[in-house]
Length: 517
Image (cartoon, rainbow, N blue to C red; front, side, top):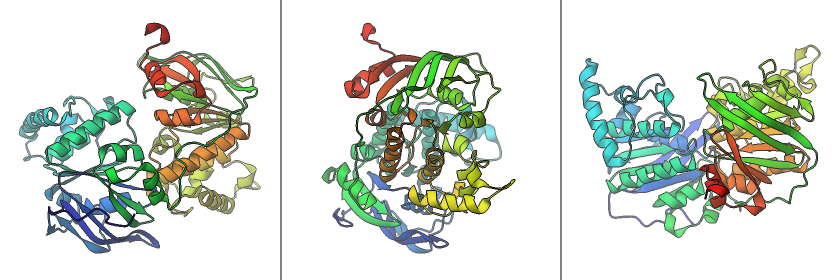
């Protein structure tokens, strides 16, 4: 498939980019990119992490300035020096990590920066009326008086979309919009996007998920290493073809692994209970076992106790009950912390890489050493050996394909997927007896997903125990040897991965047991 296999349409493109190039020092993020997005369509842009997708859209939204090239909006050359200029041109953007003030209400966030005057009350009153109208028209219902920090991520995303629509956006850019959504929330988002398309809005969808591209887009453009490699009609391609265009080679879309050979128990959990600060019971007597040489997957809709389970086992949350690691009881009262868990042989890839896995202002080499800086390999007598840490980071970055492979670059300057690779490399390479994994491929591209899955399976085959939490049911089914399903803080059932399916697991995830059917 060649570039621009989609015939030129007679309509004027809603957005046209001509010869866009952008470099950050020696890194060429975008190279001579041309793109046409037709009005009233959903246009997907896919590519590996670091392919330049987000940079290109940040240029369109005025966050970055292109080194060369031209932007046309509805056929007119348009200069977009900042986000306010983009908004005036009818362009709105919903970022992967939301830009909301957490202690403000929904209504206050929507009005923020778009007030009618110095008097806030009339602005809020007008926004409340318009918000009600937008919510009804586009299925974007949300309580205008709810505080952002008290609503789920699915509703926070609706607020971001409403912010753009309130500012009269006709073109919406969504950057990895389902990265933090559960499958039901993602399905609802797709209904919203179809609704917006039917109302004449133009949508640019940046995603690495091929299923989403095939399900929701009309046209898809593929980027690789800063260049546009193809633009095709979605109906005329396939996931396999798109994966090959993204990565430049054939990609294994299904996990290739031999049957597990479980051995002795490594982790034993009995009657684990957690009550949060508000007195709500989050874990209600959870019991499970993970053996050496197996992957136990935990399936469930987000918010049903999986996060609390990982935090207790990772040493960052108190609980009651019994947890044994290789036969030795772990303290659950708070006297032991994450460092003690690492000393006990437990590695942890947390669910939220930015809040729990990285210090964003630290360099990559500092984050690779984070938590393991006292190890002999990083020491020179009584001092830390920074040269050894940097050399080790360079080696890990090469083997885990972190882009750009710069140990000195701050973690905040890597794409989300490459941030995830840094965390995965650190924890897997530490050689844990038990690896706790929360959402291992959230926001990660197809090539990196294949690589991370292979590393997890290799760890299992080396005789390690793995506890995997993921909201991606396909990931749970393909990676796990056994699957436990959580609902409302309880284990609803356990199945062998080879003897179950998505329908059965889906019922258990909804709290429906065999006897209740």
